[in-house]
Image (cartoon, rainbow, N blue to C red; front, side, top):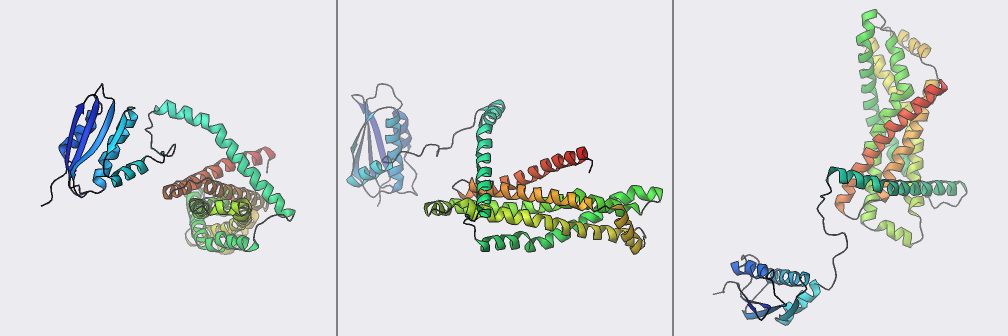
Length: 375
């Protein structure tokens, strides 16, 4: 019959003697004396720790965990350690302490408090801004190299990225833009019908979609669909050390991964914006003709008369800027991804949040510029 695990501990001439014996199995809990042996190392006046085995039978990792904790506690208290154990146990304990823990690997408690966290974020801000500007510089250099014929970008990657963010995005852009045109027409009709001015719904929907809302809707959708996909794709490559392999082979990750996606999104978002404008106008047309009782030709003529073509050009400017913002945010977060599966999820979230915040900020900036220039 197997004997249960045994631990005895006593202090002799300033040395804490711990003896282990019996059968050790991971399914059997430690004996009560094991905790006593661990707590005894905190006694004052100790000069060393001696581990020995008496009548030790079969053992597994449960015994090794206890011995490693005893040795670690002794090392922290600067106690001399004497191992009078079977050779296999001694080798395993030495292996456990052969490689020091990686700096920063241990999770530390965040006890800075609110003000401390704000201060730390403020101190980290210049470094983050510098890192982002450095990434923008790499993208600019890679773009210049493309026009000079020195880029390593593959045409197949560019075409594939265009297909992903262009053709594959048409269904969701069609649905969201048409529904937004419907909503915009309904909102306008609530007030305009009180004055018998239902026909002005055509101008409201046309100007709203062509000038800014079509581009914003495309930007939000592409942030969640393409920006997140870019961050997850490049972040996964970072975790798998594929980006390190590219650098080892002398291939620029910016040329190979970032540039085709930035160019594809910069080109496709304005085109998708035009398509979204058209679908939004169709949504307003449905409301105007089927629910407000307007003549279809009258609605189309009113749209043509009330919506100048420069509104579409302003919308294209919005769309181009949004495409750059989404692509840069997604690729930047992917390139700065950590080395774990959880980091990929965090990177994807950061990419979407950064893209949407960037879209809102750029919308405000471009709107102010247009108002100053009276366009």
